[in-house]
Image (cartoon, rainbow, N blue to C red; front, side, top):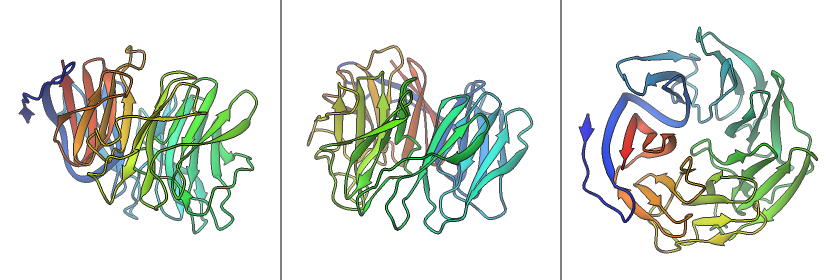
Length: 329
């Protein structure tokens, strides 16, 4: 299905929106590999669809338990997916054969893994909702195996994170950032060389369990953006977008009251040096051409939760029952 839009902004216009996959599934995590969009979702579903030839697609069922996946990551040879809710099973899927195995289990009653992010082929991080002691529950993948990542961070009561788009972890070669929400919207910054954490407050909306940062992206060790809001009030658009120019230490609210509302995923356009950014929420696709300071809704498409750039003019998005490819000119 191909639809054309006449929604122009000062800088961007949606040229086309093509459906690549239709299925009864909710998708909140995607990865790009071998000219395909790979996804994990509800009912234990995992698969791919070809970006240029969508008839080339395949789906497998990872478990008979009808697990719900909201995470997905990859190294050179494999994909990894973790289901939400306990017990949390860490699946490893071979990229060539699609054979899979469970390589780690978390049986804690509070297990609920919100995001999975690969810094490199040899290093990845994932974190779960905290236990009754409110300690940050962080797992690290190093050289092929998963283990507890030691830290002394105590989250505030009611502070957790959102399994919304697998994008509340971001990284550069030197740094990993983790975004929280709920009673507190904060940034946990891990210095990879020193193996030390810093914690920074943000002005993003917070205080209720449904409020906070849902997605972050960083251009480099200095510039980053955080988006979110309140999923129970998707139209609310106060203090739900912020940027940093000092690596997450301080944040400045942008476009408060002047954006499309609750946002689940944000991605900086490659090659734009941070100037151009796309964001998606339950009821909008929005675009910024000035480092996140102002935003224009470029589409009213609903029920899309996650996005990723294929190239400078093409974005793939996924959500309820579909994966789509959007061309921008």
